[in-house]
Image (cartoon, rainbow, N blue to C red):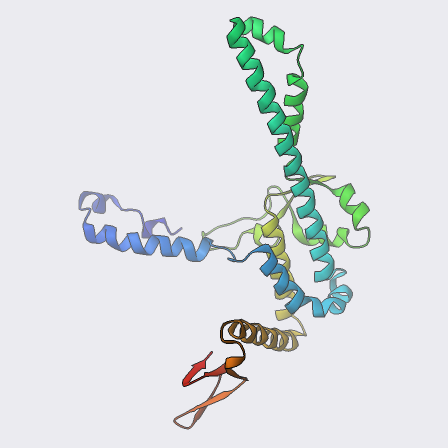
Length: 278
């Protein structure tokens, strides 16, 4: 829908100018970055936000939707650990496959086997079995078994899957700036017993996003925003304390009088003769 902003029309192709190119060299990356870059935070940072901002409302969420942020984090951690174990297993099998393959290719070269002779000889080695394990490990890398999830979280996993999974073929996007279905539902339902997790980071981000949206659109909006603001101010103050330590004086929720008008600041810091307004 927005391609015409960046791609030349037939007339512009003929009269392609440096000015045309310079404008789009700046505008296009900015546009793509703004609409396509997700939350720039580590898993640990996202988890901290969920625990500090959302977990205090666990009881409310349990009553409203049957699952809370803390339970969702536990399931996400379990999914992440499952993927890590699958990756560790793949790394081990990949090393074994590589060693067997290189050894066999060396023997093939040394004995001067033809392709037909090599195909016959390899059947008597462990390579076919190891290669099958290698292939299966790749296919299973991002696959989570629903039955395993139910056994681990019998009380909460059903609501979790209802909230964070999407079936193939659902979720249409009409414009590049539309929010994709994966923003809220990062787990793809493959069949009745398997889901695919394409990114564990996306799972944590969606937990933060979904529960946040539920609060800001619900009855506890003001209470939640007030709590989040307070916690954010504490985090900011702690960051500056790591820089200036006890050598500074900190004034949270201070007001600045500018020409008779009061402007609330999250934090005022006095460090020697320097005054910092945050």
